Length: 131
Image 1 (spheres, helix red, strand yellow):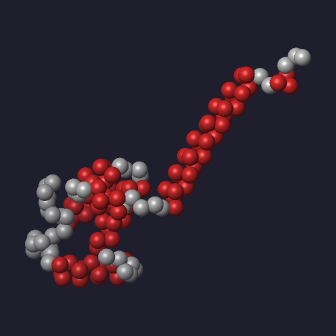
Image 2 (tube, helix red, strand yellow; image 1 turned 135 degrees about the vertical axis):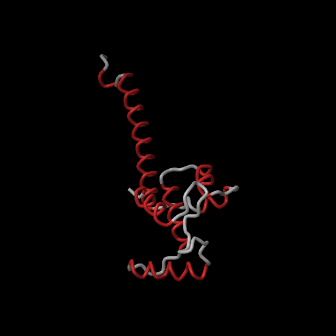
Image 3 (cartoon, rainbow, N blue to C red; image 1 turned 180 degrees about the horizontal axis):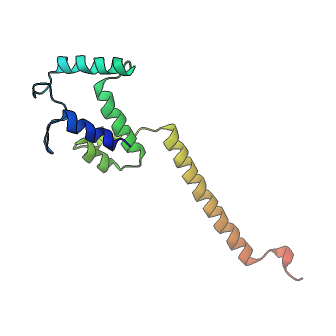
């Protein structure tokens, strides 16, 4: 679960309170972009990660949120967007989600077929009737 990691980060590195900044510099100031980027790249190197941009975290988080089945309205609220256009970006298809949709459709077809078969059985079959 990621929640303990986020709580630990907030306790160690963020300002207190609901309106506190998530990232603050050593002197309590908002990190400047060029300084933050240096820290970000250093952290990525130390973690053995290459080519990861900070904004990629937002994209990944929102894509994962969309894959849970969150509605467009829920994604908009999570991301702070006022239009559906931005939220729809994160609702792109994934192979896992496509498989879930296909399985659900198969289930609907199977349920329909079973209902049809039961209806036919209750009506009887011409071969079973007395002549």
